[in-house]
Image 1 (cartoon, rainbow over the protein chains, first blue to last red):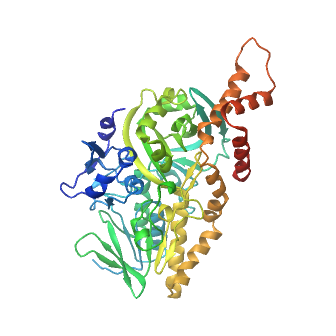
Image 2: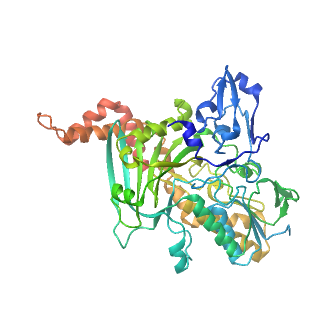
Image 3: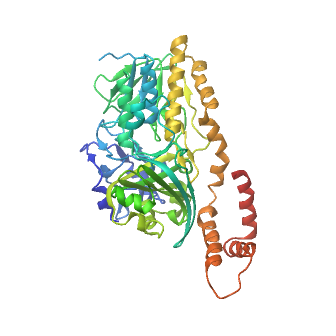
Length: 90
Length: 429
């Protein structure tokens, strides 16, 4: 199933311009493993011309990337109150 | 608002709401903080609750609490290729076990409302960033809001699998990939009648299917398919280190899982309502965080109270029970006016006396055994192979059962490894 078909079913409130997670591009530049690309269940990390790009808007706040990253490059916090994902079934 | 409370609970999931409910019912002035838009907004479970949510449910509440179905049929399946071998346990009518499927948004909202009706103050849209310390003990928390400092002599951390606060206050170090499982889930809508017919169920009855082997494409972990009233909960739980090792994407594995012949006819025609993902601490007994500090108690997923055996992931009942144990400890501390580390340590004793830590201990070697990749990649094939030979009409004379098993074992696994597996199985059971 296409990822977008899955994402369309998730309710989000995006806190524009205020990402709740950040990557350290200096660390990512030197990273060989790039485990973030595969571990994220909603493909928030993509490779563009060998650079890791983070598009955090679809984040479901699972926290897997933070634990998977072997270099501690991901700064991960909770979004502000009521922002981010709001599950309707759970 | 008044900024002083008898206790502050961080998180309005099962652990937090159970604690807030009990505290409020005993007359404590309690604040429960939830970062989501509503309780349950950030929460996901596969969806099986073992036992009723509270022992003191009133008769009308026994009818109204938002369970989906009462699980009377448990299926364990091993899948290999397009084959599967299953064991089914079906409970008898009147004596059916108290096991229920739930959807967390409705369930968590109900729990939180119950706490609120008992007198707890619930504040949503309120993420907590820090614990406030005074004289070496926790004295309050910083809510990410203007004028957001709130104070209490006791803080209950019920902030879930990721519990950033548990790490900040030193109850644990950062998790490693080997200590976590990643779970994804789909809620798939189907009519009640279709579900009843496909799973062979009557009225409010439900079924729970757990699958290992092909389900996770041979990776350490398991898959599940549970019946709700008018939907199915389908998902995968994979050890994070296995996903990283194999460079696998869990949603690709989920797609593959939905295609296996055991599953595809059951979900056919269903409409996807929601896709979700969540972490499950897979720590075992020894690596779990410390559950208390000066003025702090941790409950539920935040304290690592999970049993994850691949076939079964249990956490919600531990969350409810540990939330209750934390509340009792706080009430006791208030009665004695003693919030010292020793008073908080009484929580650990309560946990040891309860089934929570007893179960975690009982299942610890099983969890170690379940890290053996052969259980997922090899043995479903071996067992499937034995049955395939047994039931196939080949025109050849049949071999004895032990001979079949032996040949299957030898064709899939080295003898030394089989012996090692048997040795680990000894601890496993």
